[in-house]
Length: 177
Image (cartoon, rainbow, N blue to C red; front, side, top):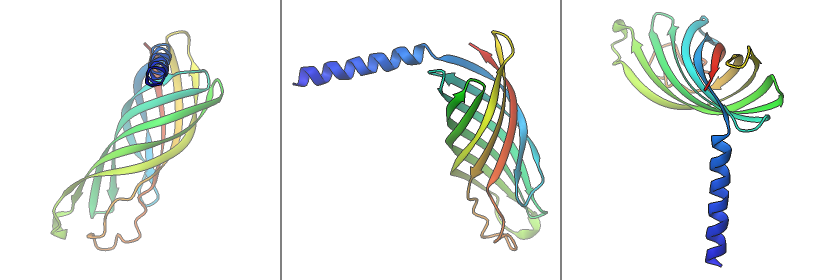
């Protein structure tokens, strides 16, 4: 019985590895905007690595840089790492759901007498996008994601009602590898 289980496990791992090797993989730069309810829209920059394992299923890994100002009291700079599952109901459109690790540095105004902090927060996101082939080498990807995140601003006076969730709109050229 142990031999059969081991053989089935090795067969499953071999099949998974061959599927991963056959994936269409692309890499490229992103630019976009991010906007939280209580802030102005801010430009963000980043890069994405995307793999499609089947015509209907893919995964996206990306990193971005964004900065938000919360009045004259605080500035938050974030380097989110996101992993996103992609479901393509049609070849050029996808639904997205995933998680992110948000490395955030918060610089408080000197008048507040609060030490600057660096946090590592976990958040969820969902959204969708369009991916258009521009020949055999490059795709244009346009993406909208809504991120659920909870910064801890309790120590800053007047920020109890600050909304931390935000959305991003990105566009990028993904070059096939």
